[in-house]
Image (cartoon, rainbow, N blue to C red):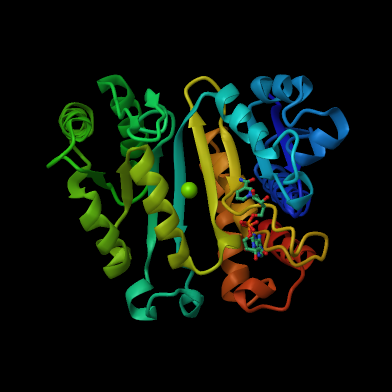
Length: 348
Ligand code: NAI
Ligand code: MG
C-alpha cells in the first residue's frame, strides 16, 4: 500500500520549497507508518529548457498515475521574452488532473497578527477555508471577441454546483460546520441556480451544517471587516478568484499560504499560492511554510491521513509561535533552518 507522490519542483524557489514539502512528508510518513514513494519531474520553464515543452509527456503520465501531485512554482523572467510559456504547463496539469475544486485556507497564526494589513484585533482569529469552483463559470463560457462588442458567457449546471458544494460541506464537517455561500443571486441567473442547489443539497445530505448566503459585493467588505467570522466560504470561479486573493493578504506573507486543487478522478494537486519569486531564488530566503502546509493538505485530501496532516500543521504552528521563521515574516532563519525546526517537532 505504498502511496506514490509526484514532485514538480519547477522554477525559481520552486525546488527549495518542494524540498521542504518532501522533508515533512517523509518525516510525518515515518511517524505515522505511511509508506511514501517520491518521483520528481520537470514542469514549466525548466521543462522548456530541457525538453522544449512546459508539460512533457513523461510528466503528464507520472501525474495522472500518481496518488497525489505537489507543485513548487513555475515561471520567471527568463521565459518572458517569447516562445512557449511556463504557465501553459500549469494549465495543462490542472486539466490533466480534472481539478475542479480549489481549496485555499487562510489562517492568521497566533503571534503573527502584526503582519496583517488589518488591525490586529480585527484580523486575530482568522481561520477560514475558501472553496472555489475551478472549471466552470464565465472563465470557461463561450466568448465573442470584438472591438465594438464582446461577451463572455457565464453558465453553471446543477451537477457542477452540487459537486463543489459537497466538497465545501464535507470540509466543514472537519471544521466548525459552517458554510457561507457567496453569490449574486439578486442579479444573476447562475447565482440563483447556485443558491437553490446549495440549499437543496444541505437540506438533503448535510442537515448538520449551518449555511448562510452573502452577496459577493457585501462579502468583499465583510472579509476585511470581520474575517474571523467565517469558517468555510463556498463560491464560483470568478468570485472565488477575486475573494481568495483579497483574503490571502490578511494572513501576512504570501509565503505562508497553501492550496489544494481536488479532482474526482485523481488525488489532486497541492501547491503553495506564491510564484517562483525569482528575486529571492537560490538564496535560502524562501519561506517554506506555504509548501509544507500544502503537503499537510495532500495527506488530508489525497491520502485520507488526517492525523499525519495535523502532525505537520501542529509542528509548523509550534515553530511560528517559537519565533522561527524566514525574513518575510520578520524572522532570521533560512529556508533550511525552518525545514529542520519543523521536522524536529514532527518526531518529538
Ligand atoms: P511571487 O509570488 O513569485 O512573488 C511575489 C513577492 O513575494 C516577491 O517579492 C517574492 O520574493 C515574495 N515571495 C513569494 N513567495 C515567497 C516565499 N515563499 N517566501 C518569501 N517571499 C516570497 O509572484 P510574482 O513576482 O508576481 O511572480 C514571479 C513569477 O512566478 C512569474 O514568472 C509568475 O508568472 C510566476 N507565478 C507562478 C505561480 C505558480 O507557479 N503557481 C503563481 C504566481 C506567479
Ligand atoms: Mg487569482
